[in-house]
Image (cartoon, rainbow, N blue to C red; front, side):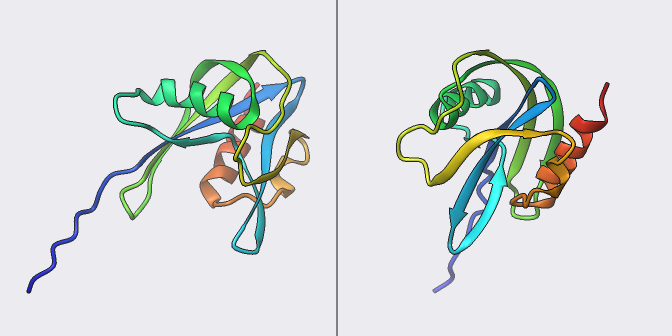
Length: 134
């Protein structure tokens, strides 16, 4: 019997939210590892990437944001694509949504941003890019 596997494309939408020289990160603990991520997640059927960014930020951080621009796009070897958007907070205070496996949600200074333990190198690249923009 021959087994055929499909390489299904996963698309993730990620928000980089900056306010007063601070950036929003979510502190996660998963499989015994602690790390920080930008709010974001998978794009659902029938949803645009931009709609997913807005929904994920609301679900994970209880914020309403406006997308300013696409900052970074990366395709992984497993065919996963991530889109990193610069966003501006429109309303709300950051707090974790229900059912999130995160430990905390808070603002971190842009100066200390590169010292955080990010989930992967592409989150670090996005952080460096936003830090270097005027």
